[in-house]
Length: 104
Image (cartoon, rainbow, N blue to C red; front, side, top):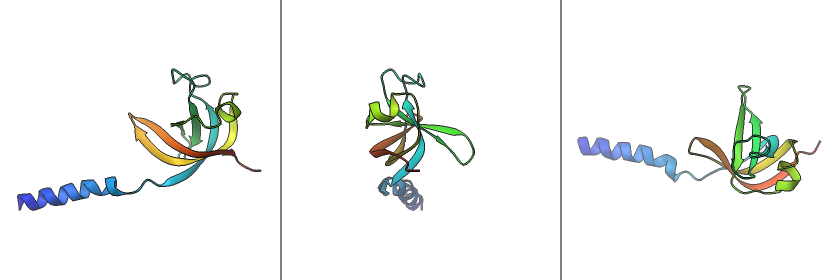
């Protein structure tokens, strides 16, 4: 019985690891985590997104796509970032595949 419970528990905890990462598109304000936020040691793209609860969440981009165009020239409102979201060391990260401004 004990072995069966261990087997069921290990399967239950393994299922989320088997799930494929889903690509999402987030809309928010693009800025530099070093220059604008003071949260990084080097220039790093960041996207601030207002959640349903009204709180602002900051996602750090794992790759600096379009850094000079959208992120390190102050703030870029209505920016769309597509990629896979993950959490690492308590920080929200997005592995970006595309960055563009939202069309009006």
